[in-house]
Image (cartoon, one colour):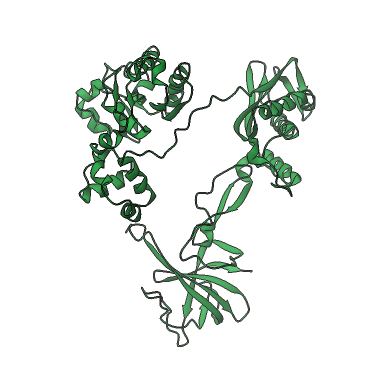
Amino acid sequence: MWCPDWPVVAAGLPATVPAAVLANGEVLACSPAARVEGVRRGMRRRDAQARCPELRLVERAPQVEAQRFDEVLEALEQLTPGVAPIRPGLCALRVPPRYYGGERETAAVLAERIVELGVWDVRCGVADGAFAAEHAARRALTQDVWIVPPGGSADFVGELGIDVVEDAALADLLRRLGVRTLGAFARLSRADVRTRFGDTGALLHRLAQGEDPRPVARRQAPPELVAGSAFEPPLETSEAAVFSLRTTAEQCVAQLAHHGLVATAVRIEVDSGDTTVQARTWRHPAWFDAAALLDRLRWQLAAGASAGVPGPGRRDGHSPGRRDEYRQGIGAVRFVPEETSAVAEHADTLFGSGPDAQVERGAARVQALIGPEAVQALRTQGGRAPADQVHAAPWGERVAVARPAERPWPGQIPAPAPATVFASPRPASVAGAEGQRVIVTTRGAVSAVPAHFRVGAAEPWQQVAAWAGPWPVDERWWDEASARRVARFQVVGVDGQAWLLVLDGDTWFTEARYD
C-alpha cells in the first residue's frame, strides 16, 4: 500500500494548493498542483519558486511523517494483523484475499479505511514479493489496485527501467554499461554480477528475476510499559520518594519480564505540580533491575535538588533547605522504558557475563555528575590503522560496531597492537646507512634499508636496531579526492623502544608507540 507524496500529506498541505516539502534545500515531495506548474522532485528551492512563484514551501519533519503514518498503520491493523512498515507512506501486508471476496475487493476495503483518515490518494499493488508489489502500486490509479498475476513478477519487474534502483551510483553505472531495464540486468550471469557489483548488485539481480529474499518484518504494537506513582501531598525529600517507589520499580521490571523483555534505556520523569521538573534518559550496559532503577532515581533527584529546583516562594533557582529537599515537592514519578530487548539476549553464560556490578554503578554515578557523554566505553572494531580499530561510545550505549574486527583487513599490521596511539601523528624521518631518504616504491619495495630514524622534528637521530615492514595500504583508489596510499613500518631503536612509523606519500610520521 502506497500513499504518494507522503511528506506533503503529513505536513497537512492540501493537494489543490501548489506546495512542496524541502530537505537540504531541495524539493523532496510536491503536491499534484505543484507538479502541474512544473515543480519536480530534486529541484533547488530557487528553481522551484521560479517555476511556481506562489509555491508554498515547508521544511521536512521526519518525526511528524512517522507519527502521522503510525495512525495509518494502526487503522490497517484493525482490519488485518501483521502490517510491515517500509518507510512513511509505504507499507507491506499479507491479507487472505478470500476473506473479503478477492484481491481487488480486499484492496478496496483497505483503501476505504485509509480514506476515512483523510488520506485521499492511496494505491495498492499485489504481487508475489514486496519489491514487485511496490512498483505495482506505483502503476495503480488513485484509490485503485494493480494486480500482478501469480508467477508473473519476473515479467512485470523486467519491464521496469533501471532508474527504479534506489542506489543512484549503481543505477548510473549500469546505465553507462548499456543496461537500460531490469530485465536486461536479470539476463546477466549471477556469478558475474556478484563478482562485479558485490552483495548490492546480487540482491538487485535476484529482485530483477522476480525473486524477493527479503522477509517482511511485521510490526508489533509495543505494550504499555510505563510505571509510576503520584503523591498527595507531594513529597519533599528524595529519600522519601525513593523509598515509596520501591514497589513501583519492582512492578516495572516484572511487567517487562511478563512480556519477555528487559529495559536497556529508561526515561525517568519527575513531576512537581503541573510542571515536569526533570526528565532524563538513563542507559544501562546490560539491563535495568529494580535496584538500578532506584539508584538512577536517587541520583537524578539529588542532582535536581543540588541544582536548586525553585519552590513556590522562591523563583530565583535557589533552595535554602537541605540538599535533598524539593521545595515544590515531588508530585509524581514515572519510569518510561525507551529501549527494550528480549530477555534471552542478556542471559548470563555459565560463568557469568557483562561488566562488574560495582564498576557499572560507579560509571553510572559519574555520568550522573558530569553527563552521559563524559564517560566513554571503548570497543575493538575493524580497521587498518591503529586509530581506526578503536570505537568509543558513551558508557551504557549499545552501539553496533560498523566495522567488524573479524573481517579481513588487507594491510593491517600484525599483533601485538601498539599501546599508545597518538591523537595527531608526529613528524618523523627515516634514512639509510648513507643518509639517503628511505621511501617505498609503487610495488611496495623499500628504496634503502632503514638505518637511522627520529620520531619527532626536535628529537635526536638514533640507530635502528630492528625493523619490519612495509605494510602498504592503497585506500579509496577509485576516488581521486580521498585516495590515500601509505606504508607502515615497525622500528626498534637501540634504546629498546619500539615505534610504528608510517610513510604517507613522501612524508614520514610517527603513528604509535609500543610500550
